[in-house]
Length: 250
Length: 285
Image 1 (tube, rainbow over the protein chains, first blue to last red):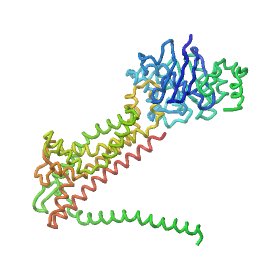
Image 2: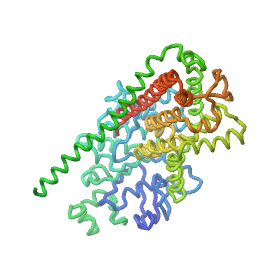
Image 3: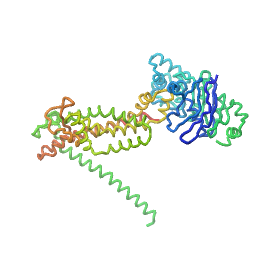
Image 4: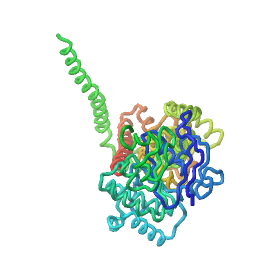
């Protein structure tokens, strides 16, 4: 089933045409990587999928984005519910300046869940899913900002999981982390794939090759190539893709 | 003398000029405070704080003045804090950043610089006459609230601006509404800065004299205010009244009241500085 489907998506920031006629679909329970040089529009496209661009005043969009067959820019869509379903993990770990527990419980609170037991259970489950529980189970009331960068990023993933999304968008989730933390995040992505659809933007081509099923290569706002990851990295069809993945530019 | 030597000379000269400038302000302040303390400290005792005003200097106290100041402080806070913080939140988080917003912003900054006596005239017309509050505590508090609103609005906006966008994105990204994001994340993160601004604004209100004289606060009030509609006086007016009398004993009273007023404003500023440092340490992104 096509979980996410974009049809002829064009995005403008003011007069700047940053995404040109993007058409692409993503299946359930897969990991899709967006690669390309800085400014190619990959992050913009990722943010189009949960409407995080809505806050940019010069943002304009043409074309359609469907999730589970529903147009997410339709007037009837409640953007809060969309973002609950399509979670997001950001480049720099951005936990709330509160306790570890509160960070994960926040999503439940804002979506109206008040049952204490349910909250506690969900917090534990989410932290286990993000492979952080063992490290933090005795310090749940400590400030989240006292954790290491890698732990903070896994906390951000736990926080996202707590509201039961179906899709998780990751915007260069490991670019601010050391290699060991990065390896943990990648491992986590492979595990989460079982239950979630994951879209990841990355600058690291090895990372894209390691974690993703399919890879999309963006260049100057165009979707140049979208293929199975193994195919794209071993047998790129376009010259630009080949040049980029072999490190000739970017 | 070579060019290099000349530059070094300038460098050195400026250092000493700078030191002189810095000490000028400090020395003046120390002389002023020492002078006041020498005159006033001996006069401060329990009776001074609990006595009503009197025509005889040695029996006069500041009970009505400091209770009036406390009333004004409380009422002004109740009126100005919700208005100022809400306006700051609107302008920073909700308002569109267009030409109109720019004009509003410019005007608020200008309002903060309007002489306080003008606010007094405004208060006289609106609160004392049109709304018929008379020369009451309520009229005074509303007038001072208007006076410090721009300060609170600007401080709120600055504090909100200092909250990194990543925090907003994190909250929106989980499906929070704008209000939830502001209430649960942004306001707590900005509260140190907002609180500092509020306290500094209120400590300015405590020292204001001119607008209250214009709206008709009295120098001689023989009773402690019980009700927001009561007539009142405040410490700065009491001080003004005493130091303008010819008898030297009243000058001593004035000095003593100045000491009390200084202590009050120093404590408020101290709390503001403390809160600011505490929040800066607690939240580091």
